[in-house]
Length: 123
Image (tube, rainbow, N blue to C red):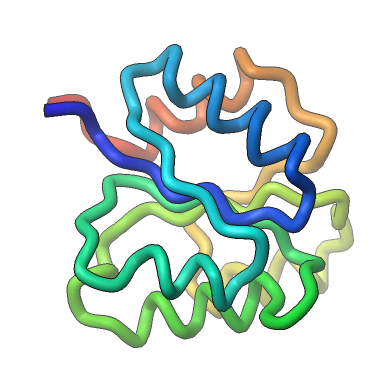
């Protein structure tokens, strides 16, 4: 059974690029266009990894991470923040919200896969 990853980003291009990269690594990607869509996708769904943008309409990445971490079944799931934001104070907010790692866009697929391999245990 393939591992599942949720990709939440308001950019369809980013969702497609990250989903394509995840498929290469054996993941089955689910997608959402903002934090609320991401939460809706998680309902009743087991995931091995979540990758989210920070700046999105409806619900931003920090609010999304806090909402995910509030659900017991997702407290151990690695969450990577993939964003254009590189400021230290924003990174600290992400860490405090429960982000496992932080990647700054644009990110190359090799680096993304390297980070995923570090945070998602192999089966």
